[in-house]
Length: 69
Image 1 (cartoon, rainbow, N blue to C red):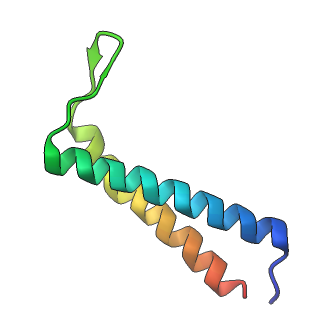
Image 2 (image 1 turned 60 degrees about the horizontal axis):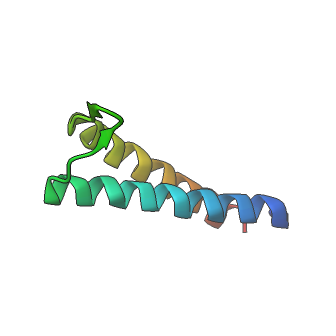
């Protein structure tokens, strides 16, 4: 099955964005970076959940891209 160009571009862009988000969560966990939005500190639990979820979405996007070729 051939994948058209807009879908390929979408999968590449979304895969890269999710990969970057996952890496930022990982770096936050490794370095214990605090995140404060306004006056509210964001708990580290968000990165414990965000890292595997974002990484899984990136893997899924790249898998779909490879499958569509």
